Image 1 (spheres, one colour):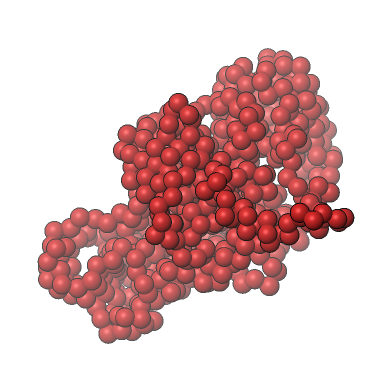
Image 2 (cartoon, one colour):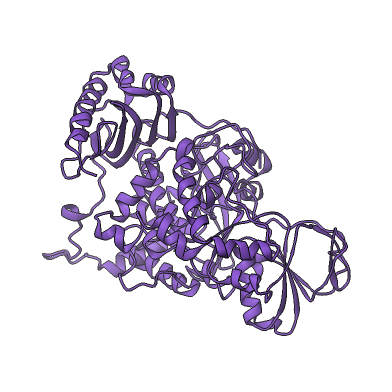
Length: 600
């Protein structure tokens, strides 16, 4: 609710924070923070993605960075309301530093700063050509040597990567690589995006035919060009593929399709990469200064080694290789796994007339799509949110303003509501023998995604097929071995099979680094993804941010970018600004470079 007491509480603290930061008075700044406090900075102060937890961590960050960052101003955004009350007040801030302009969010608890978000919006002198700075396009006047727009594009396409070198090479041309490529294009950073597929969007088109986005459209916009307001709530894979292809053309990306990255090596002396790629059968050597792995949030497919795989006479596929159900009508299929891909594939196979069994080896978190949209996302990403003035940008920043250390506390009540609303649904699943969980601490899907990137299914219909037995279920036992025509479980159950699908997930993204560069570099970087929550598949110690994502790594000039469409949109801004600063020779002293605790 709106409350004058919240503005009365917030304004003097923001004013005092500005005064302290501009004056370089670290003691005065730190005293404005509560004992339990969180300053999450996205590039603006740390040239990193870093959360300082507690007053002493805030002090350490300021002692390292303040003299270099040189804050010039900080104030409440006059266009935004302050909300809450004198006990818990929150508002939006805008600020300037010596190098850039930023935006953020602040929460006070009992008069002290509890959470602070600062994000870099743009670099001074290097603003994007948009709004009043948009390019003219047409060149009025007379010039016998002028090139048309098409001729300029043709010249760039012919020369970049051959006569001239890209500053950034992005390996992976899905939504992550495309979003980052678009940001860098607008910032004037010479960039090539490469992908092994024939067309942009093939990363989606070539997956199993029933694949669709399980997140709603309001959550999934790309930078600059939002989906139109008649776009479906849940996008089919081929429609997303076509959108990505269109987007690469409209945003004028230098996108090399049918291009495979074969090897990469960093030269410490020249501080650039030598990357050998094969483009439509021709070997090309590129020498970018920065290399970005944009292969998603996942690494190489995890295919378990099971006794008897060499003698099984049927087909075996990882879920990423599964073509869809068309060839399997009347066939017996065993799908090993019980998360998103497993459910989608099982449902499509059942629709295609296959006899399909799901093998659930461990518990899975399930949330119904309609319930997630209403309770989990409705306040930030929905038509209702838009009507209330919560734009996509504002929703992204609200979500980013919640420090990961306490985010689960905000999520648990939401999932308690979901559990209560859909109690009959969950009872039916459990009666069928399905093993359910709500995350290690009851915080549900988002925390599972952030911590481990697996272990859940957003139900868009497959659960009903499990409940009524259309999709057969074997839960609680892992696979023992394969015979010539069956999957045998450790409890002795034999499942006849013509096809085995391993819906067993993916490894860390540094697995791609081992293949492309070498194992030493992969180990130098360490595990990618996870928070260090010390929950299943997210070992400690606590990191406070996603490991190695969208920020500097221990390997100079090597970056990772990806995640879902929301993360690709939001974090591409901060990665592009880090790369632009380096391209322009701006000094970027990184604070809190992540230590390496896990290799994979």
